[in-house]
Image 1: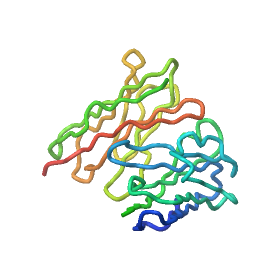
Image 2: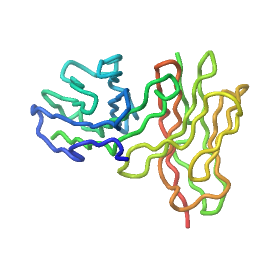
Image 3: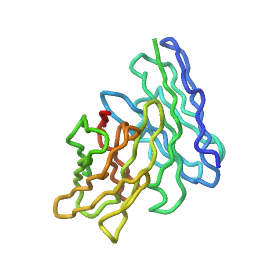
Length: 116
Length: 111
């Protein structure tokens, strides 16, 4: 089975530009998570969806960040406008429903974002 | 509030030596506990998990972890480290629908 798929794997953009990161979760998984990883702050949960509905977006840093999940097989994380401090590796993860399965998260390879 | 502490930022061991990575958590009840491994340039892979029951859990790649309630710890162990185990290891705590990762321990393996 295919794992979590993320695209692009690397993104370099200039400050002020819009950036869109994409994620395809594992088929059959009902929960989807977006994380950001930096040296300074470690791994932070930005937002998670359950059955395509955003449940907790308290980790989204500011209004420049938005996430959508239009269907069970696709999600986007958008940054507009981007800033150099947004440079990080962004991970998408998915899991099945159920309190225990929820915590067994399968991670994608990540998107390394560099904003110059 | 729940929290996870991994006291060791870096650990270096020789190939074939035993390994123990420390993880301490803070939570009022027994949380769900996890260890993940991240190889360079890769996403995180689940090594093992603890929900309840036997406090010694076995995972993939020969790893095991022991939950000690009295010490609020969930340390990861491996009896004999291989060079391919060099990676970063993250402990995570889950309660209800909250999930927190530790800051990670980077393992270096000497040949």
